[in-house]
Length: 309
Image (cartoon, rainbow, N blue to C red; front, side, top):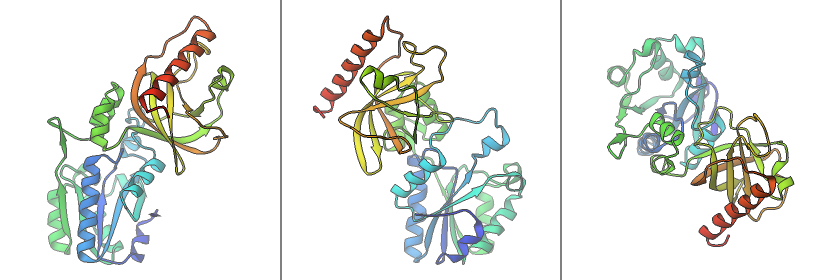
């Protein structure tokens, strides 16, 4: 997948260009429908489908203290879109100039950058431009005048509720991993590099890989069965999410995962940790030996449930 960082780079792509525009946090089933429509339109016209998104999340620009936790980091978003067969991704910086740009001027900028602009696909409720003045109706008006198509993709529904990043974020926060997985079309996961921890797991006999969870939306503290991607390899694992009250005091919340049947060094590598099933809540044990025994039971439970892997 080619990642573009400036609008001008769109000029090098074979037209007509069909843009799928949005934030795409989580790349859920609604986002997937939007991307698929742009891909289908581009294939029909013999053009190029391009996913366009913005970083940071606009809410992080407008309300940095109240911005929602991310379902996917920028790097994870790229990876998820690549798995959908996206060949071109444009990531535009969301800064003061972009936030204050009139909706019509933004569209004119897109028209000028594409050779030509064949179409724009957005969510039916998408708003853009200064003061969120732009909507699908305006896009269609401008498209009729400038010769590009507009698709306002309706929300995908699940259990009577529109699938949205907000709904998934809420489900993950309350521990409803089943709702999140159905809405995403895959298990909920976080992606990040392995960082150095206190080597507590190794001392207990169960070495773990630590991922810094800062900024991610996470499920409630506890122990989870997981599947872990490390490059092209997959492993079953057990994740502890929380502050490790038995061995630390007032510690920062961490994500630490023990990979089953793995030996090696993961420091600096990127892991994608999929939360599959809640096993138990985090608790403070009376001794390190009690904790060690419980970890062994957690691993045995995951091994048994996954066919002895």
